[in-house]
Amino acid sequence: MKERLKQILAQREKRRIFDPNGTPSAVLVPIYEKDGQPHILFIKRTEWVEKHKGEISFPGGTYEAQDKTLLDTALRESAEEIGLKPDDVEVLGELDETSVKTNYIITPFLGFIPWPYEFRVDGRETEAIIEAPISALLDRGHSRQELRDDETVTTYRYNYQGSVIWGATARILAEFLDIFAQAARP
Image 1 (spheres, rainbow, N blue to C red):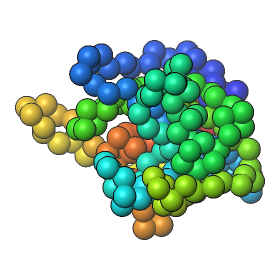
Image 2 (image 1 turned 135 degrees about the vertical axis):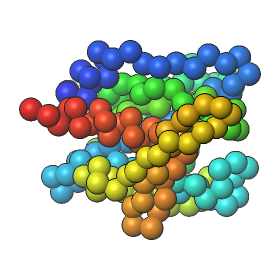
Image 3 (image 1 turned 90 degrees about the vertical axis):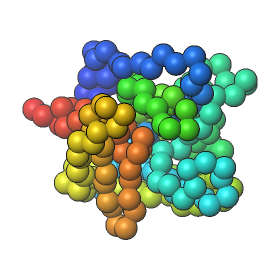
Image 4 (image 1 turned 180 degrees about the horizontal axis):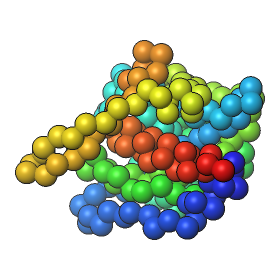
Protein backbone atom coordinates (compact mmCIF):
# COMPACT_ATOMS: atom_id res chain seq x y z
CA MET A 1 0.00 0.00 0.00
CA LYS A 2 2.82 2.45 0.85
CA GLU A 3 4.42 2.06 -2.55
CA ARG A 4 1.10 2.47 -4.33
CA LEU A 5 0.37 5.68 -2.38
CA LYS A 6 3.86 7.02 -3.20
CA GLN A 7 3.32 6.24 -6.87
CA ILE A 8 -0.08 7.97 -7.05
CA LEU A 9 1.21 11.06 -5.20
CA ALA A 10 4.28 11.30 -7.45
CA GLN A 11 2.19 11.11 -10.64
CA ARG A 12 -0.42 13.73 -9.81
CA GLU A 13 -0.19 17.48 -10.18
CA LYS A 14 -0.38 19.11 -6.78
CA ARG A 15 -2.64 22.17 -6.43
CA ARG A 16 -0.71 25.13 -5.07
CA ILE A 17 -2.00 28.41 -3.63
CA PHE A 18 -0.07 31.56 -4.44
CA ASP A 19 -0.93 34.29 -1.94
CA PRO A 20 1.85 36.67 -0.89
CA ASN A 21 -0.20 37.59 2.20
CA GLY A 22 -0.72 33.98 3.27
CA THR A 23 1.19 32.46 6.18
CA PRO A 24 2.98 29.26 5.11
CA SER A 25 2.29 26.26 7.32
CA ALA A 26 2.45 22.49 7.07
CA VAL A 27 0.87 19.41 8.60
CA LEU A 28 1.75 15.75 8.70
CA VAL A 29 -0.96 13.24 7.82
CA PRO A 30 0.36 10.22 9.75
CA ILE A 31 -0.81 6.77 8.68
CA TYR A 32 0.17 3.38 10.05
CA GLU A 33 -0.84 -0.29 10.21
CA LYS A 34 -2.48 -1.44 13.44
CA ASP A 35 -4.01 -4.88 13.88
CA GLY A 36 -3.74 -5.43 10.13
CA GLN A 37 -5.75 -2.29 9.31
CA PRO A 38 -4.53 1.07 8.01
CA HIS A 39 -5.13 3.88 10.52
CA ILE A 40 -4.77 7.64 10.48
CA LEU A 41 -3.78 9.84 13.41
CA PHE A 42 -5.32 13.17 14.40
CA ILE A 43 -4.77 15.46 17.35
CA LYS A 44 -7.24 17.41 19.43
CA ARG A 45 -5.93 20.92 20.03
CA THR A 46 -6.09 22.38 23.53
CA GLU A 47 -8.24 25.31 24.56
CA TRP A 48 -5.04 27.28 25.34
CA VAL A 49 -3.76 27.68 21.80
CA GLU A 50 -4.25 31.04 20.15
CA LYS A 51 -6.17 29.79 17.10
CA HIS A 52 -8.30 26.74 16.27
CA LYS A 53 -8.99 25.94 19.95
CA GLY A 54 -10.28 22.43 20.62
CA GLU A 55 -10.36 21.48 16.95
CA ILE A 56 -9.44 18.09 15.53
CA SER A 57 -6.48 18.48 13.19
CA PHE A 58 -3.29 16.89 11.97
CA PRO A 59 -0.03 17.67 13.79
CA GLY A 60 1.57 20.74 12.27
CA GLY A 61 1.94 24.48 12.40
CA THR A 62 3.51 27.63 11.04
CA TYR A 63 6.77 27.76 9.10
CA GLU A 64 9.58 29.18 11.26
CA ALA A 65 13.00 30.60 10.38
CA GLN A 66 14.87 27.44 11.48
CA ASP A 67 12.84 25.31 9.03
CA LYS A 68 14.60 24.76 5.70
CA THR A 69 11.40 23.51 4.05
CA LEU A 70 7.72 23.09 4.82
CA LEU A 71 8.40 19.38 5.32
CA ASP A 72 10.79 20.42 8.11
CA THR A 73 7.91 22.45 9.58
CA ALA A 74 5.54 19.47 9.57
CA LEU A 75 8.14 17.16 11.12
CA ARG A 76 9.27 19.71 13.75
CA GLU A 77 5.70 20.43 14.80
CA SER A 78 4.88 16.70 14.97
CA ALA A 79 7.88 16.19 17.25
CA GLU A 80 6.80 19.09 19.47
CA GLU A 81 3.10 18.21 19.63
CA ILE A 82 3.12 14.41 19.88
CA GLY A 83 6.75 13.35 20.31
CA LEU A 84 7.01 11.81 16.82
CA LYS A 85 10.69 11.71 15.84
CA PRO A 86 11.33 12.98 12.28
CA ASP A 87 13.54 9.95 11.51
CA ASP A 88 10.58 7.66 12.28
CA VAL A 89 8.48 9.15 9.46
CA GLU A 90 8.62 7.73 5.95
CA VAL A 91 7.34 10.60 3.80
CA LEU A 92 5.16 9.30 0.96
CA GLY A 93 4.41 12.62 -0.74
CA GLU A 94 2.41 15.82 -0.66
CA LEU A 95 -1.29 16.55 -0.92
CA ASP A 96 -2.86 19.73 -2.33
CA GLU A 97 -2.33 22.99 -0.49
CA THR A 98 -5.38 24.40 1.24
CA SER A 99 -6.10 27.64 3.06
CA VAL A 100 -8.13 28.75 6.05
CA LYS A 101 -9.89 31.98 7.02
CA THR A 102 -7.06 32.81 9.42
CA ASN A 103 -4.88 33.23 6.28
CA TYR A 104 -2.71 30.12 6.69
CA ILE A 105 -1.74 28.24 3.55
CA ILE A 106 -1.34 24.62 4.60
CA THR A 107 0.91 22.12 2.84
CA PRO A 108 -0.02 18.55 3.92
CA PHE A 109 2.58 15.78 3.83
CA LEU A 110 1.54 12.14 3.92
CA GLY A 111 3.81 10.05 6.13
CA PHE A 112 3.92 6.42 7.19
CA ILE A 113 4.88 5.88 10.83
CA PRO A 114 5.78 2.74 12.82
CA TRP A 115 3.30 1.07 15.14
CA PRO A 116 3.20 0.68 18.12
CA TYR A 117 4.68 4.07 18.99
CA GLU A 118 5.24 5.89 22.27
CA PHE A 119 3.64 9.24 21.57
CA ARG A 120 4.06 12.09 24.01
CA VAL A 121 1.20 14.61 24.03
CA ASP A 122 2.66 18.02 24.85
CA GLY A 123 -0.40 19.39 26.71
CA ARG A 124 0.23 22.96 25.51
CA GLU A 125 -0.93 22.65 21.91
CA THR A 126 -2.19 19.07 21.89
CA GLU A 127 -4.76 17.72 24.31
CA ALA A 128 -5.18 14.21 22.90
CA ILE A 129 -4.35 11.83 20.09
CA ILE A 130 -7.18 10.31 18.08
CA GLU A 131 -6.53 7.10 16.16
CA ALA A 132 -9.05 6.17 13.49
CA PRO A 133 -9.21 3.17 11.18
CA ILE A 134 -9.30 4.51 7.64
CA SER A 135 -12.18 2.14 6.81
CA ALA A 136 -14.36 3.90 9.42
CA LEU A 137 -13.71 7.29 7.85
CA LEU A 138 -14.46 6.06 4.33
CA ASP A 139 -18.01 5.33 5.50
CA ARG A 140 -18.67 8.30 7.81
CA GLY A 141 -17.94 11.44 5.83
CA HIS A 142 -20.27 13.69 3.99
CA SER A 143 -19.99 16.75 1.80
CA ARG A 144 -22.29 19.51 0.71
CA GLN A 145 -22.27 22.47 -1.64
CA GLU A 146 -22.38 25.96 -0.09
CA LEU A 147 -22.47 29.40 -1.67
CA ARG A 148 -19.72 31.65 -0.26
CA ASP A 149 -18.97 35.08 -1.70
CA ASP A 150 -20.81 34.22 -4.94
CA GLU A 151 -18.76 31.02 -5.29
CA THR A 152 -19.97 27.46 -4.81
CA VAL A 153 -17.64 25.47 -2.58
CA THR A 154 -17.72 21.90 -1.30
CA THR A 155 -17.46 21.46 2.46
CA TYR A 156 -16.65 18.19 4.20
CA ARG A 157 -17.45 16.86 7.65
CA TYR A 158 -16.53 13.58 9.34
CA ASN A 159 -17.66 12.15 12.67
CA TYR A 160 -15.60 9.56 14.46
CA GLN A 161 -16.46 8.39 17.99
CA GLY A 162 -17.78 11.80 19.01
CA SER A 163 -15.01 13.78 17.32
CA VAL A 164 -16.07 16.10 14.52
CA ILE A 165 -13.51 16.70 11.78
CA TRP A 166 -14.31 19.75 9.67
CA GLY A 167 -12.71 22.69 7.85
CA ALA A 168 -9.23 22.37 6.38
CA THR A 169 -8.60 19.06 8.17
CA ALA A 170 -11.72 17.57 6.58
CA ARG A 171 -10.68 18.87 3.12
CA ILE A 172 -7.24 17.29 3.54
CA LEU A 173 -8.82 14.07 4.81
CA ALA A 174 -11.25 13.92 1.85
CA GLU A 175 -8.38 14.27 -0.60
CA PHE A 176 -6.36 11.60 1.21
CA LEU A 177 -9.31 9.20 1.29
CA ASP A 178 -9.79 9.61 -2.48
CA ILE A 179 -6.12 8.79 -3.05
CA PHE A 180 -6.28 5.92 -0.57
CA ALA A 181 -9.30 4.46 -2.41
CA GLN A 182 -7.33 4.66 -5.69
CA ALA A 183 -4.37 2.90 -4.09
CA ALA A 184 -6.62 0.13 -2.71
CA ARG A 185 -8.05 -0.72 -6.14
CA PRO A 186 -6.59 -3.81 -7.77
